[in-house]
Image (cartoon, rainbow, N blue to C red; front, side, top):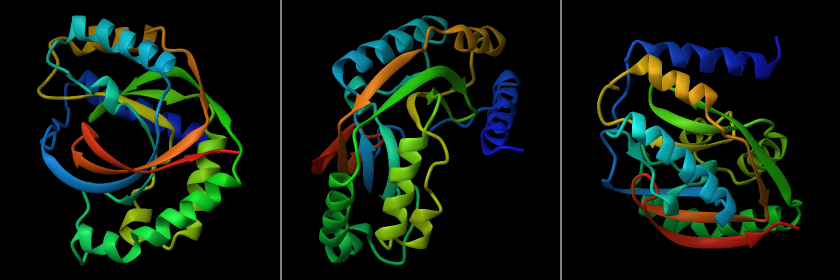
Length: 221
């Protein structure tokens, strides 16, 4: 069985939780936090497409937690993950390792070519609603090269995503009408193409990336 088929089966299983309204409300939403992430930021045109999708779904479920437009991003990998506890304080780890990680990221990005991401559908999982990329080969290759070369903590490597996606919503409470919502998600006009030209490293201060400090912006070749 291919990796993509396994991944699709996993997402289908997630949708069954949503249909039963067995959701995972996000208790961290809007809270101060400390995390360090490698991210891709959508351009203005892609943001407009994603905002349109958010607006359509909010008409059905107004209590969804909509990620603000300025916070929308695609996670490449966490350097120090927001929900993970480490042996040392994250600020201490960053003080010791951050400069080396930034140099390594910049060097890898300079040797990596710009690429295109095409989102082809929305998926509702029990924890979030996401825009999912049809093919993620370039993201996965960049992700794997960074994870292999940066010598990150093992618990960060364990958090590396297996898909390429942008989170549009998280949940505050159960849905009003899960069946109607899933139907709207499955038929949403979600196709958009994003030309990725740079990689960013951020320190996340308010979750989910509502407030960040930009530590590095590095252009792809």
